[in-house]
Amino acid sequence: MTEPFRIALLIDADNAPASKIDAILNDLAEYGEVTIRRAYGNWTKSELKSWIGELHDAAIRPMQQFDLTAHKNASDMALAIDAVELLHAAIPDAFALVSSDSDFTPLVHYLREKGRAVYGYGREKTPAPFKSACTRFTVVEKLGDTEEVAETEAGVAPARKQAAAATTGQVLKRNARLIQLLRNSIAAAADDDGWALVGTVVSRIRNQSSEDPRNYGYATWTKLIKAIDLFELKDEGTSAIAVSDRRTKR
Image: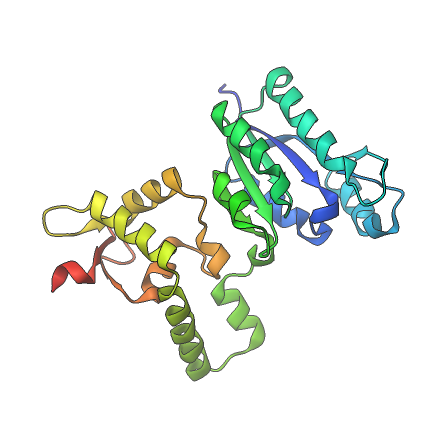
């Protein structure tokens, strides 16, 4: 039997929503087994009461850290120290950091330099340096909330669905960093006719960026690419689905 891919989940409870822990664990199951589960915080504070039930249900070990100085969060330092210790003692294959605090950015850089993948989970307001440092960063508000689910639950009429999709597409087009990432990845993977297999494009994106299509409300990269409407797709619904940049077709 092959050894499972082991993940150490470290949660900054002060900067993470307890209600999303099940969705986070479900997402991490795509990669491997979460063998280490720890949440850091001052559990005497009333602000963390919502976490208590979640800790028991998800088998997460609470790590107590008192606030030694007013307005200073000692839990961050405790989490960082444990991460380095686990790296050398338990030797997990990857780390999952749940926080919206950019102070963990140097820790992410360190872990990745040591050859570990780091999956980040945080709120949409999480500063860009922490998002970009991760192997992949997922906005927790978007977990389990793709465009199809949201539209079905809201009972949106077909015409309103189309309008919403068009608006989303316009917003995506203005994201210069995302568009450039897609165009560069397509160009690098394209054949002589300008077509690139979507699977290859996605692999290139994952190797160079922490972007996740769910952060924009889409379940897959194919659906996000289609919504942007700057690219052309062929052989949809097959394993050979390919994409090209419409600019190269002119």
